[in-house]
Length: 258
Image (cartoon, rainbow, N blue to C red):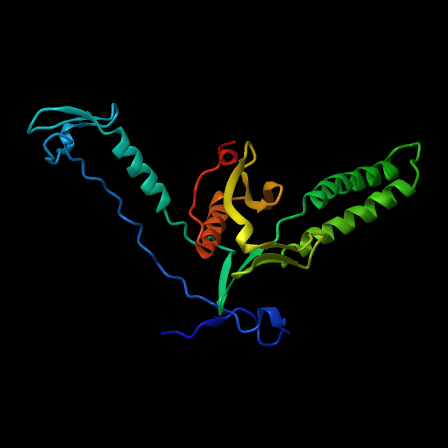
C-alpha cells in the first residue's frame, strides 16, 4: 500500500494551518444498483415486466387480473436513484482529512468586480492607444496612460488567479472559507449547526452554476452564495461532500429549480 502523498513541496514554507494534512488516495466506487419489484396489491404476486405499462404508470396482475397504479412505486424508485447518485471528484478539487477536520482545496474563480473592470480597462486601453497614434487630432495623452496602466494591472491580476487557491475548512464547530491570496475576497466563517442545506443554481444561458448555502439565523433563513463554477459537476461534488461530512440529508429547495 502506498504512503499518503504530501500535498505541499518540501522546499516551500507550509502554514501551520495546513501542516501534516494528507491527501487521500482516489477510491473507485461502483454506481449503486437501484431497482424495484412490483407486487400486486390484491394477491401479492410479483408482476412481470411485460404486464407493466411504464408510460401510463399502470400494471396488470397475471394471476388475479386486477389493474392497479404503479405511479407511487416509480416515483420512489426515481427519488432513490437520484439520492444515491455519486458524483466523482472533478479535476482541480482536492480533499484532505486531518483528525476531525476536512479541508477542500479548489482554484479561485475571478472576482466579479475584477472581471468587470478588466473587461472595461483592457479594451479601452487598446482603443485609446490606437487612437492616440492614428487620429489627426490628438486625444489627451492622459487617457491612454490611465487605461493602459489599468489594463496592465488587471492583466497581471488575472494571471495571479492561475495559482490562487480557496480553502474550505470544515469541522464540528464551523465551516470556514479562506482565499490565498485573498484577491479582494473576504474570508468567511459559518457555525456548522446553523447550516441547513446546500444547493446548485444554474445560470441560464451561460453554462455556469452557483453554489448556495442555506443558513439558519435568528431572523430566518439566509441563502448565501459561495462559489461560481464553469461545470455543474464541480458544484454538485462540493455540495455532496460538504453535506455528507455535516450529516445533512440532501433535499431540493424551490430556488434550485429557478
